[in-house]
Amino acid sequence: MVSLFAALVLLAGCTGRPDGVEPVSPFDIERYKGVWYEIMRLDHSFERGLTNVTATYDLREDGTVGVLNRGFDREKCRWKEADGTAEFQGEKTVASLSVTFFWPFAGGYHVFALDQRNYGYALVAGPSHDYLWILARRPDLPVDIRKALVAKAREQGFPVDELILVDHGQPPCKSAILSRHSGAGSCPLGAARLNQIEASARSCGPP
Image (tube, rainbow, N blue to C red):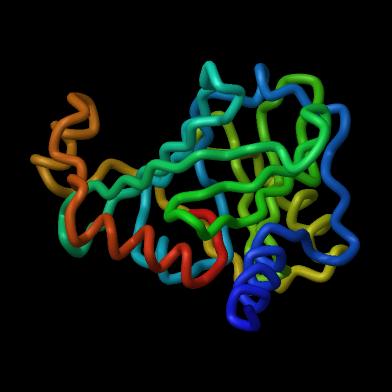
């Protein structure tokens, strides 16, 4: 019983949100769905070394949100993918979700800044101040917008000096370029992908 309680406390912490962070509301998942490019991030083991990172969200018939994260490992010259499922933690008009990549571990996903007019960029926090992403609909984002988002994250206590800029240049490998356009050649469900998902689960962070 003690171990079960401890596990529940751990999971609650993973799906929580950082102190002071208020999720965006109103929020429209219909407008948010689709492909997002990772512009900046606080780096963690499940993404370390990956470039050209994207996240694709789609709505499922059961009301959940499908999540597909994809990034290129330049050292191994191959694409890596992770499939997950997201569910709203409360009202669907509030941008606070729980994302699961490796059951039963879930991570908090909280949009706390959003281009409400065009849904062109977003600032996303994980369950603690150790997790932060700047996303955009294009692989680049005007410097002034990027600086404004970083300033907002700084005000909320995130270690923004540790943010890294994600490279979206053309992958250097010929086979990788082909697979990027054909959809083939991405990392299959095997040891590499499982390790990535398990690393995400252990660190409480959604890739």
